[in-house]
Amino acid sequence: MDYSNDFSAISRDWLHHSGLTLREAAHILCNREPKVLGWATDDVRALRSLIEQDVHAGKLKTLAIYVGGLGNERQIDQTALLPDDQLSFERSTVEVKELQRWCEQIDRPHPWQVAQQKDSSPELSSVPDERPLDPRERTSLLRIIRALGVMANLKARGAATPIVRQLQELGFDGPHEATIRQVLDQARGLEAEKKPQ
Image 1 (tube, rainbow, N blue to C red):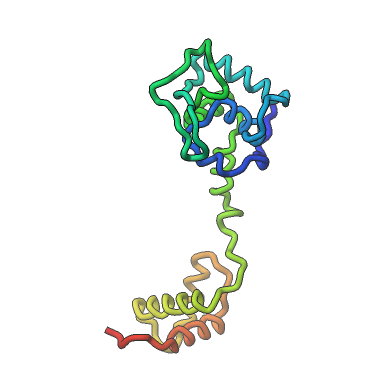
Image 2 (image 1 turned 180 degrees about the vertical axis):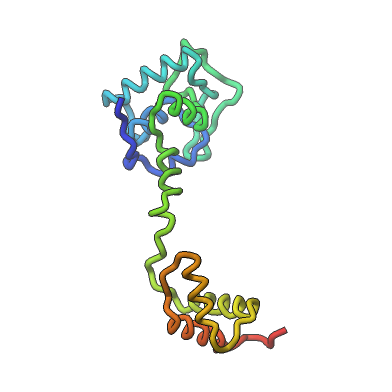
């Protein structure tokens, strides 16, 4: 069966809960915001049937009974658990880890998996910060460059060439020697607030 793996309709807050009611779980897995009440859509109704069937078969274990509260402050009665034949989609809860395990068993995408894939995606994780540096950030970077230069015993002249070589070995195309010289000069020209130790 072809399932949506977009999950853009769901508020990201839902991904931080450790437990969900079965109604919330069914809505989330169908890319529906759980705050919208009712079971009006066919996909949610079909998933509700599958959940009910798999809970009865022991393939999906409910956790406890939801008794009140909102968000991460929700109250779950850990001592109470409805029998399978009295399953309540409003009150029976499932642990998110159990829900993820169940989704993977039935080969159904889930938003936690999609969020994890986006977080580890090279094109997203390697995108540089596009905004310009503010003066404080720039000064901090120059201080770091100066400290690294001292630690590496960089000479006042000729340091740019080995830095270019090292950058090329690391797979970076640039910056050029002139830029490196300019940055090193700026770093060396910083005035310290205190006397060096």
